[in-house]
Length: 201
Image 1: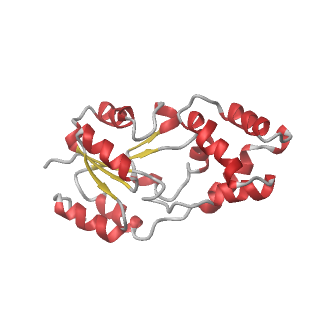
Image 2: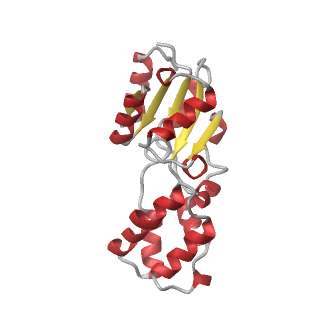
């Protein structure tokens, strides 16, 4: 197997999944989880693929919950997001070790403009040759077009990519596209998988 690109998901692989943003929004604006679902499942997905600008997203958020627009700022979202960022245990060592391999490291992340801006100086960004963001490429996983954006950019075959994601649906979609993919559980298991496919740290 000739792997040219090792492709990482972000949240759930490089950083733990958390509910800090939603929790803080709920407290600040007195919103329930059910009310916030109107955002996460309603108009946020359009924002995450670039169909809404940041201002349009904030306008929609304020209108949806009948809030004064001046109170709904980018900082309300990003300060919580930055507070929640912490490295997944063991991932720094893995990324540092993979820099010694012949494979190129890349990232494919479902995220929106303001959250991506909040992560520009994140801990792991220096390890990646290219970071593919859903709001820039116009597609979220598990849409096949998200994976195709990676192979098109590098002009390689899907089977030359090893993809790592904590979401089993995304792993299955990547596999269907032709990538070698694994569901992330922890750093130790990932090291074993990398060794199994011939990529040694």
